[in-house]
Length: 401
Image (cartoon, rainbow, N blue to C red):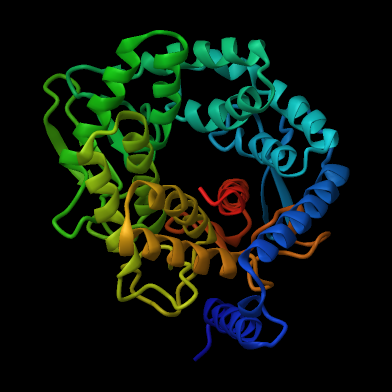
């Protein structure tokens, strides 16, 4: 019996297979050409999106295209930094001032979030937007916003627990929840430690990474999603999932966040334990028996209906970008394996099976991401962070580093 998800997966697999075996397909084209073509398509698509975004001052930022409708969000949404960040990546890719102007315009909208102490996602919100803007333009005003944001994020750190708190009350029955996603905010804090000369930011980042390393990972090197701690004692209350299929499952995007996070921690600290952990997570992902042939994982590695389950292009884009960096920190066959795997993912994501034609897909680049499957939210849709990490992976592949 063909469910809608199964039919979509089958069509996607056939499309990708046809692309790869065709004499005109990506397998016969140098990766550099695939990357350049994908960047050109991305620029056309985002130009179309910019021309069609509604004027909504309350919700100005595109997040997804679901049920035939564009969904936009306010700046306080945890994904708000990804669209400006993608615009910065297009400016980096092309050097075209139109992208700088658009990136500056949408980045400026996020200025109020520098004082937001109610979220752990300031790395996503500010470092993807203002951080890329500072890197590419040197705008000193961006530096001030980022340093203020780091001060705000610091307020969520508990020395008793040793981590930055992920969610406040209201998301679930938690005391001091820490999610694997939170590893992604440490790059921001490590930058601020250096840029603002605040050693405490580096210390708290290392504490968070070490506590997560100790408590989030299972013997097979997969990660749980949420570890809830006792605020008063720092002891573990429970290990659960919020977006995976079960508390014991390997939610795909969670594995991607962990891989990316520990790769960054090694880059910034050169501590061998972080490189070791990144390698372990990479091995879990790359050699998993339920990984599809196109290297785009199912939304959860333990989803019961595999292969009749949605895939997650977002997880693939994050993994791909992380591996393209991680390959620089290892040698020999391991480095080659990381390169080969990431390039296979990039070929999949840049194929017609995933990369949308300009003017379709609500203006987003990639199709077939999965947001929150248990909540029936953003299933088999585009999502802004998918595009962001896809563009980052393309730029890393183009730079060959």
